[in-house]
Image (cartoon, rainbow, N blue to C red):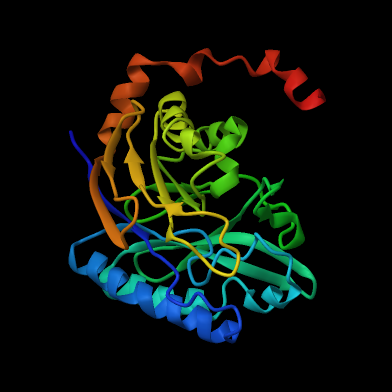
Length: 289
């Protein structure tokens, strides 16, 4: 029997490409730009909505300016409380990535998960932090995540989160599957060039290897003053067979909606018994090296 869950992804460009503006003003503009898309998702019956990495601001990691520490906030905090109101209004689960401040000098790249009644369920902190030249100096801004690979039982599905650079690591993707994830959201900020050829390779592979759905989001446009390249959008959903079922444009602010049939998970896993046939007793060398 089918079990359809309507899911959505929002990809957005940054409306203020002027770093001289106050950080609060830049964040408010990005938040205000997202609200109509969030409202549209609710009106279209989206049951689980994912936002892009650090959705309420630019991707500031190409630089190493400590002023951007001001963009961080507690989780839960003001932005999560606001998104909880929209989640409750539309009975819509939300995956909300923000820049988290745990305490003075301690920051994480985090995504909160909010249930359909507005309840904050918990958070995932990005585990793998890149320091890749040019353009991705994340170790300046984020500590590696703590808390493992949680899966959140929401009203509509069991939801896991992986964030951007995490997608290059199959180990955590496997953990999410073993922990029961049915849909894994991967909010990202990735530009044309170095890893674009991997964008539609790795995440469908995670979906196929673990028998779950992947929801991959990416922002669009270019962001000054860093100008590291074009964020190429193409947010998409991949099914448990590793097939991309819906895809957004490369250069347009957009809400992407797809109806995902969770019954496919059991169907695929009955055929490909990867969880049965895996050999954790033979994998010690993975963690010894």
